[in-house]
Length: 292
Image 1 (cartoon, rainbow, N blue to C red):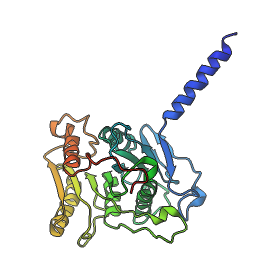
Image 2 (cartoon, one colour):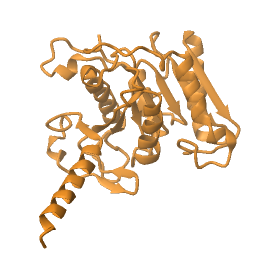
Image 3 (cartoon, rainbow, N blue to C red):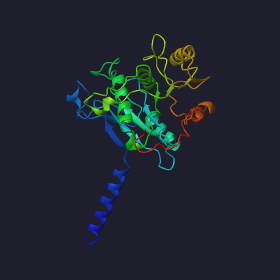
Image 4 (cartoon, rainbow, N blue to C red):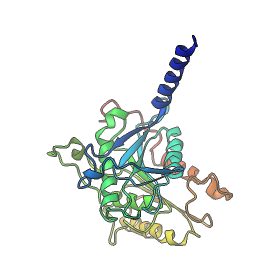
């Protein structure tokens, strides 16, 4: 029994270390999402690596290692049909890969309009959450030593629809806003969309200042090929930089590709890495404090 205090001390120390390693979660609104503040404290439901019942949207922070950080940030939007979020395979896994490239990542948990009993609107709330997440990141660039002009967005499947919603309807910050976060722009400086769905793609031309784009899909993922081809055509019409990879096979939902038996799908992330490097998003000098 004489060793009990020492044992308790070690256990508490270990618990503290484990807590210190848990990623930081930042809720997008302090008082809850506008109009739904009463749902702020409703708990999320986690099953395996998927998340449902998101009522207090947030970003989870995955900082790049200090010796690799290059000032670039990416907001990651997992897929899940707007019914759930594949937070592990399409959130944490890409964040870890991109961290190794020097990119600080933020995984979005947005509200889910297609979940049973959801009070949210598909045309409004995922877009609102994505735009707000971009503002939160841009308003706190000094905290993570980021360049406010190098904040991109990456989405999978339904998350790719949220990407399109954010990219093609950017809103400038309001310098007179009482909330300092609302003073920041929601603009994405580049977009990466992996097997996106059709929602969010504009019916007409894309904005003339749409950011550089990287799109990837498998040709046997039949319902998700057209959204990419439509966006490709709009980028070509606008004469803006775009790269597209259309693989013969791979179906839908292959995530980071590591579990696929197809060599092309198994290594698709190298195409993304190459594009990031060729586009200048991996070699930028570390910005000075303040991100200006």
